[in-house]
Length: 119
Image 1 (tube, rainbow, N blue to C red):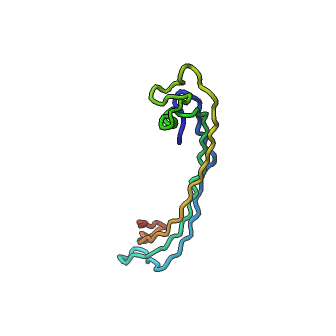
Image 2: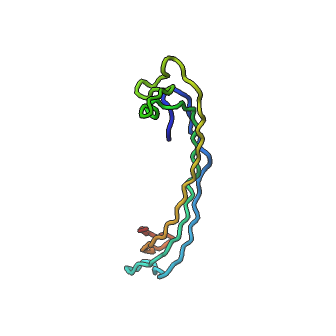
Image 3: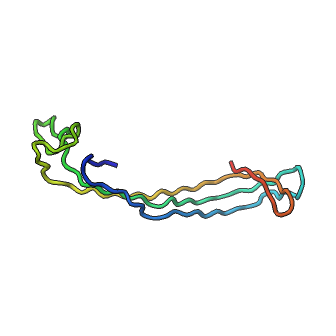
């Protein structure tokens, strides 16, 4: 996310994520058998939101092609001639989500214990 070094910015966590999983046992594994079972999973992941806000000045590099001078010099990370000019506020947020279909071969070890590997 863009911000001008030397000026305020913050990244508060917007929310917490979650997961929903639907499982279908296509082939059942028998207890203590060498024949594995197969499960299909359909997972939905919500990783939550991330927010960003910062105060920015107009960067001098944006104006050099036009022969103009802006208030902030990114190479020195300071204002030109101690004049920061007008500030602009930048606010952004993003939510990240995913759907993951997976296949899991598994074995039933008996006694309510199972071992599987999702791929």
